[in-house]
Amino acid sequence: MKIKEKKIVSSSKYLNFVATTFENKNHNEDVWYSVERNNNGKTVLIAAIVGNKLVVTKEFRVAIEDYEWALPAGLIEEGDTIEETAERELKEETNLELESIVKKTRFMTNSAGLTNEVVSIVFAYAKGQVGQDGNEQTEDIETFLMDKNGVQNLMKDEKKIFSAKAWLIFDKFVREGSW
Image 1: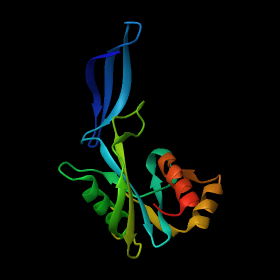
Image 2: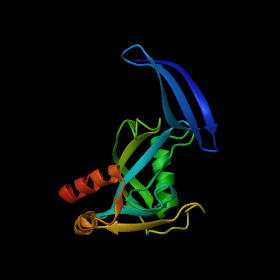
Image 3: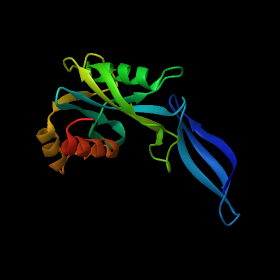
Image 4: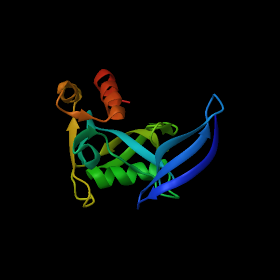
């Protein structure tokens, strides 16, 4: 497999639609279409606990035309670190303050067949009172602090839509209760 050419088919404020011409394993030319972020493509997902409760978000997602149950997350801006982004996004989306980071993952692919976006997951403890004052006008985010039973009950609701990454962290929290 060998990349031969990448061409931006269409562009918007935040995304590029890209056609990548490549040589496949049979040495034939193929084209793969994907979406790339205009920035560095790096994001952070924050798995935070306040006391003994997990910080859970319910956010309206235009692309799915519904609410997604997830965790606070955001784009890493040029020049910012994972830690700085985690602190900023947690405050903006939930009004909580990052208290300590237990661990962070290396960057991992988010949906490699579709996008160049990568994510680092930050496992942390936070403090404060939840609120939505920092939400941007394009964000509709409600924050919940849920204990193990609350998260377990949430996961049983088959009508809810979950982030795949968050689901795995919800499951870890239900089993272990902490980081």
